Image: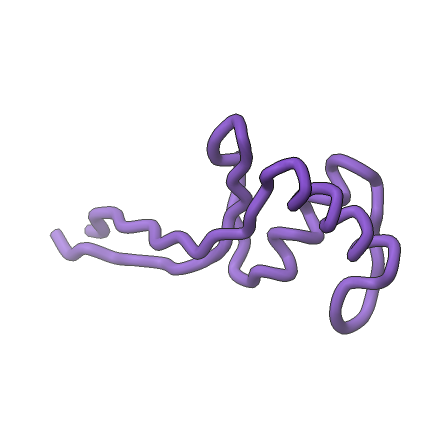
Length: 74
């Protein structure tokens, strides 16, 4: 069996690791704030509403962290 690893981003907070992970940091943050505040946007980067929502999340202890998932692959 060969080991396979994938690297991506997840959100961790005061209550531990939130469910799900994304390939990019932006996507992880965008999904998280969308779930909490309904703040969504299109285009490059986070819009002003999303940036404000992410600041609130960070103030409450949430962080975007890089994760590596390793598993056996047949």
